[in-house]
Length: 193
Image (cartoon, rainbow, N blue to C red; front, side):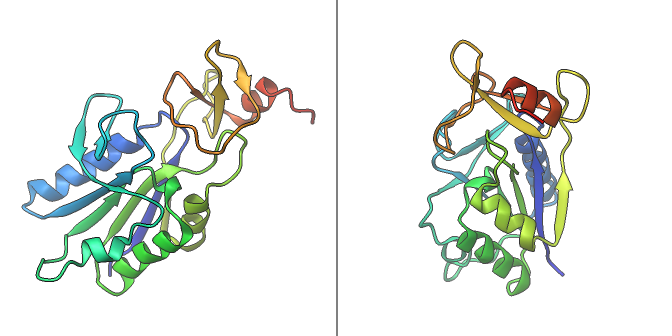
């Protein structure tokens, strides 16, 4: 029975690297996969899943109105052995339901990788829906500067100072976000407790 998996973590935990390894494992055994990534993520080349350690693969860029089932279930094409989604936090709730449909009705395993929360500690729409309905939730560990598990994503400005307000989505890497434990995240933002 195919399942919908959600692999989640803070920034810089190796989510894309894990996705690319899973993709390699399927392809090494002669199985066809389909990779998706968010079109809004333009840090590297458009339509690619790219890891900070230098690995990369072509992917289908999805927008908020992309019909994932229509792309995966094209007439005349065999279904892929697996669908892998990077930047899954940018999925809509409806797109997550489409991924569940691929697993439940078409028998295609779906591995979705993404952030759980934004820079204010709030759930993304796609992450919230994945947390609600995924068959399997897998946390990928990252490390705070203190050595504890990093679970939060602190947004910083060009000077490295914490940012507490702004749009939920602002694309960036190590220059814009720092993965921290909850304690250091709250201390950086001056939260009172």
